[in-house]
Image 1: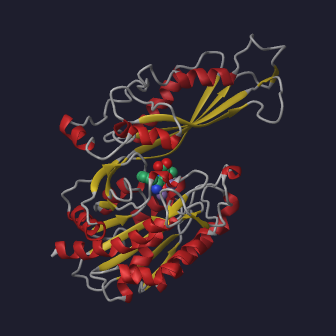
Image 2 (image 1 turned 90 degrees about the vertical axis):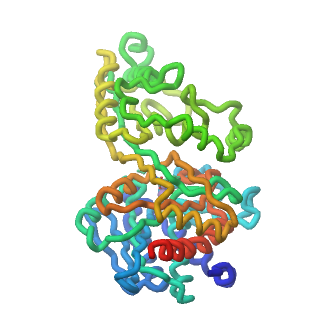
Image 3 (image 1 turned 180 degrees about the horizontal axis):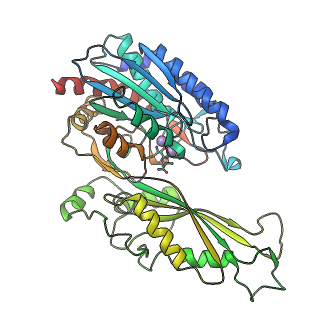
Length: 461
Ligand code: BES
Ligand code: MN
Ligand code: MN
């Protein structure tokens, strides 16, 4: 199998098709973009048809539709189920973008001398999902599709995949497969390919602290009543101790501890703390005592404030004690923490540390279970062989700090393993202003994916 000539020959079209998709602001979190999200689903459906799926459909759900496509060539052959998402994160803060988020441009960067496409969703996940559509086109156009394939592309990943959970429960048969293939993660670097073997779980909550029943003059009342913003900051500060351990009682009870051997294995992945700090322009890294940076961001649970607001934030100064203060808090979880339990522990603890001078309300949002996949499965071996074919190197297994909550549910509902072949780089700025995806990475992904199908089918014999 030699995928490169076809990819080289069609690369301009592959890039332009992706650019057209990136122009659609399919922001699932923002109700004003509802029609754009739906429009994106229709574009995906058409692209799957053109790529050679025999049957494509838009499956309605209580939320955004799921695009389904398939090509079944022989029931005796294995079936690969491709998962991806066509929704994107909100582009905010817009003023920090160098070019508008939904007007894709190609620019060269130090890490992407061949150019990168700058747009919201370029890497997460439109670009990576579309690699699979183009890999499908390659396989059907060249008569090299060795097995059955199903596509399931959703539009609610960035808001918790609720409708996909609903869809899985109702369509186990339709979605039956031998392996699930996903590109929605990253790799270590362009010359160090890696396969993601773990994802963290998540518990996401919002907190509201209420002090006096109305906003007050900070001179007339300041010092005499609790300021909810001061109190919220104080409460948040109490959630970690001096060693950056999380102080919620019971939080670590079910955390899987890795053996010395496993940690030594992890430490072999190439990593420079100095380059890491330099890329982020920080004088020093920071995190839980006793763990390395790569451990802190993958095998350890965390608690972070994602947003905090209240009071006056407009131009100039206003002297006021606000009635309310708010924060959005996420906890990244690891095996075998249960996100429902953790949410409850957080809620009880947060309420218990509130001083009597304020009222506290905790509202749970979405969550998800962590995932770890073994490296001796057929799927992992096929992925490894695919990278060997196109990178000339054996990929390194690496647990990621990000979350794709639906992956644990796939295992539960569909009883199959997910293989996470990510082609993005950490520096691609997903969820940030100036998100981008390297052209090299995009094309390399399209070249590599058909090799996975080939090896998986051969190894299944
Ligand atoms: N594709 C990301 C997750 C990801 C990125 C995992 C890079 C590993 C490496 C996904 O779209 C995402 O952003 N997930 C959310 C969780 C979701 C429930 C909103 C996350 O990790 O914050
Ligand atoms: Mn994603
Ligand atoms: Mn994302």
